[in-house]
Amino acid sequence: MDPLPFPCLALYEGANTPKPTFFDIFEEAMIECAIDSLTNNKKKLWSTPQGWILVRDAAAAATFLQNPRDSGDKIHLPHLPEDLPSKSTCVLSGKPTIPGCVALLVEPFATVIWYLHVGEEDGEWTRHEYDIGTQRLDPPIDGEDHEKVPICSIAACRGKFYFNGGLSDIGVLEFSPSAAAASPVFSSLELAGEFEVVYRAKVFLVESGEDLYMVMLVYHSFRCDKTDYETRVYRMDFSEQPPRWRAAGDLAGGAFLLSPWYFGATCSAAELGLHEDCVYAFVPGDDEVPTCLKMSSVKDGWDDFVDVPAAHRALWMPTDS
Image (tube, rainbow, N blue to C red):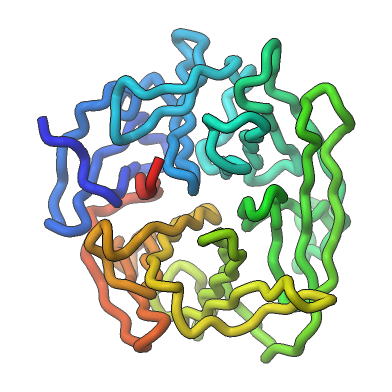
């Protein structure tokens, strides 16, 4: 069986679909995958922007990082003790083969993270409940008019995790090099600059070439699951104090890969045959909009679409793991 083309999409047809099917975005066709750990319906998968796939095998009580290019290339980890939601976000602080790498799982609804120092002897997953403030609920839910702010978009850049990127500030999460040290440290970084007010948008954070980018999908309708949006990209300028977002006219020849929930990765467009300076965003279908892949050129301003089989969720298996 031929190896998977990269990047490709691992599609889950429904919310409770146990295993994915694979879609070739170049040939626009379904394909087979020869890697058992990516197709076994007893395993749960989380894709990382760094190219590795976090796999939790409940039956075998095993957890590992899988290289999707090579079935034999695995990094075995302590078993993740809880069956976390499939919509959790998984990010690595860097290459998992380098000492000090932190594997981070962010739950999608609860204000809870799980983290692990990869490769550390006698290491284990640590559960940490965080509190980064509250936000107003309008309308109230179950009589509550406020809720704790959850981490949504997140990316690893220059040894730190940046999350919930906004126009005036951004969250920062830092870990000690050793699991035996203090708890993770949360802080907020004030940003300079002024921006046009945006009323409805999805925000993704992406690290590329040690630069931090923010992709905003600005919607022109009241629903955020349609393709009617404008793609805006900003790059963080850390050289100024305070730092500021600056509009990006290109992606330095790269391509960004986005999918719900808050997954954002980068890859070399030229090496993989993608359009340079282009954002590829998976759009789940519904009764009104078919499932598709929307391509938006940051440099030239065009949009194009690839039809994708109906899917509730998709994982990118993208980059240079």
